[in-house]
Length: 125
Length: 180
Image (cartoon, rainbow over all chains, first blue to last red; front, side, top):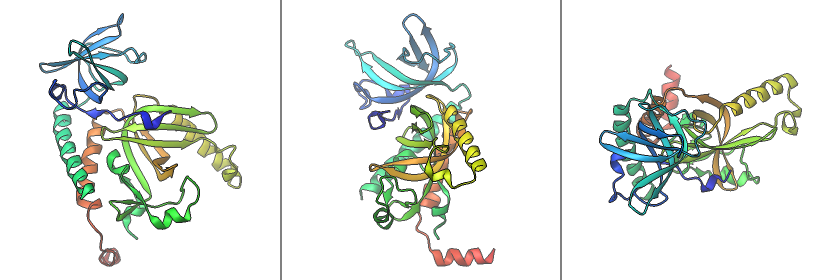
């Protein structure tokens, strides 16, 4: 295990992943959450959606995960920006999170970001 | 004694990874693994045990030796080590063999639960190995409910703001304890 080389997946919403976002970068390690809209066994690719936002997932390393359209999934992996500027998350970890309260998740995520920003400032002063 | 020293301090990974080693405990431990070391939260409050919760994102298993794994809570990755050497380590040879077997079975059971992608709550001692902070695991609990992770974030934030970030006046605390 090369623990020092594995980066944590920054918690993002699909809405955060627009081309002008600082997270929209080749190789960014991210954790995304969304509803499974499509899954192709042949290409091991999935598409998750959150409202009107969507993201393609390369799921070739997730052989043990059972994909069910309509279920909610969370993926951790690295972002690959293709030449046409389409983003694909190369997932290394995936899990079904059907029981998640997405409203609570998004509200808590804002609190977490705020707390982290405050603590980072405290740590540098 | 500061009550933080004796409890499992719930920390987000970025806070866990910013713990600093107490100068007095680091000088007394020459080995890379500081078993009895005390670490400091924000260079002030002592932490010897910690609790983390997140997704298992890597796993390195060495039979009858150890399981090393990483817990990703979205703010960082916490390295964890679960020892599996109870039956062949001299450390345990002087202890009651029945108790050692129970410990070994418990550790093996924990190791089988830790798989990539599961949400796990980990408790243990804060240690350092080659300058990297880690948790030496004593307890593993798999969380089936994904909301447990959200509640853990909120717990960590609340505890940091209302407890860990506050300096403690020990004489006043001792007076309060005597009253109870």
